[in-house]
Image (cartoon, helix red, strand yellow):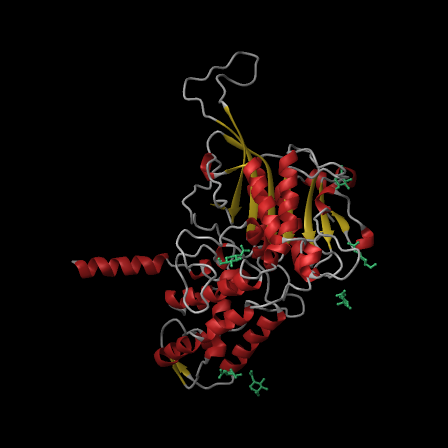
Length: 488
Ligand SMILES: *[C@@H]1O[C@H](CO)[C@@H](O)[C@H](O)[C@H]1NC(C)=O
Ligand SMILES: *[C@@H]1O[C@H](CO)[C@@H](O)[C@H](O)[C@H]1NC(C)=O
Ligand SMILES: *[C@@H]1O[C@H](CO)[C@@H](O)[C@H](O)[C@H]1NC(C)=O
Ligand SMILES: *[C@@H]1O[C@H](CO)[C@@H](O)[C@H](O)[C@H]1NC(C)=O
Ligand SMILES: *[C@@H]1O[C@H](CO)[C@@H](O)[C@H](O)[C@H]1NC(C)=O
Ligand SMILES: *[C@@H]1O[C@H](CO)[C@@H](O)[C@H](O)[C@H]1NC(C)=O
């Protein structure tokens, strides 16, 4: 009885385990689980009146380096004479890398990535209802093609109004495109770390991740060789590309065969190597991560303090109530660091992350943050109590009575949809933080982060330590441009 219950439990655990949700930066977008038990819905009585998102581009083809790894695996298999047992590796003799137009595919968005971006546009239009028909809408994007394409597909999903897009004088969608990964835009960028000379310091993340990988990949190769292969010997070097090919093949052409090759515990090790890479590389384990993430965080805080439809004094542009920024994976963890989230625990010993032993209590998970099209979002909410007595409507007068008692303005953070509490500031509706306390929290985090130019060791004299691009026009002298959406 006990045994069969256990067996059923194990079977259902296996069925429920989805490697695509444990593939770190190779995961297609999925809503992260509610790690803190806070429901994702907007709390009753609250309305979001302003929101800011910093978003990784959608699913893409491989980087040239990983593509070379896939080709090496293909060559190794094709050059071998071997037999493979029935089972999850039986497809190996027939397998070809999922890139069929090498000069044009690597680095660019896949159709899955385009869909992810379009879907987010549709979702946020419905979630916030900020944009009445005909509103002009500007988003911000780092300059690499896959990022601009993500911004464009987002805009198309969000606006979706062909008449506005095709008539140039009515055009309502603009992407403000910033130079990507250069050393002369400093903090005023969606890719600020490349303007921070001190940034790649200490444990670079990659070294930590590689050391962890070397602790498990050889055993995985041994298991596969013993169970399935005669005449072909996989080694540790082959395991990384094979595990990457689960997410990438799914995203490129819907092929999930590599997802079935590995055991859940092997996926959890693969995932943890990614966690180490981002935690120590661009996240809270890098002492310059918060410095790099702070300017965007502060600019959004300043806009939340003045509220929607306004901008701080001296601004030349009033951003829309939905502030969208599109960028690369490594620019998302710095915002987590600047906010001081996902790096604290009431249970001691979780952070800094262990280099050798995954702690299941950690919140910092690459799969829940830098999956393709992953994001950190901040929402500003105005809240009232919800009336419990009957409500009345008077003919000819819009609205009903009684209305709720005002509770104030609050902020919450959502990472890949899941709400994440601000440490020590959760007394608002739905564990939100009051705007005043949030603002004070950001100031306190700013003291820890320091001044961008100074802490980063920038030598150029025109360095800027603030994000200003949200409240001004593009400056062509700095390589910025406005891309107006249109139907060709
Ligand atoms: C087999 O290996 C040789 C030598 O390493 C290489 O030049 C060749 O491209 C490989 N063949 C295939 C089909 O991958
Ligand atoms: C929309 O806003 C952009 C600034 O982002 C501006 O350049 C453009 O002229 C505006 N378009 C319309 C139709 O108002
Ligand atoms: C900025 O990058 C350029 C091109 O990579 C390089 O030549 C230049 O020395 C860098 N400048 C500074 C101040 O780091
Ligand atoms: C594993 O095999 C590849 C060839 O597929 C070879 O290039 C590499 O050096 C080997 N790695 C180890 C750790 O033996
Ligand atoms: C993250 O936590 C570690 C360990 O508690 C701490 O040393 C580090 O300063 C924290 N980083 C940030 C950005 O808060
Ligand atoms: C700083 O000066 C350099 C060299 O003149 C220029 O290329 C760059 O755009 C300037 N950066 C800013 C933020 O003004």
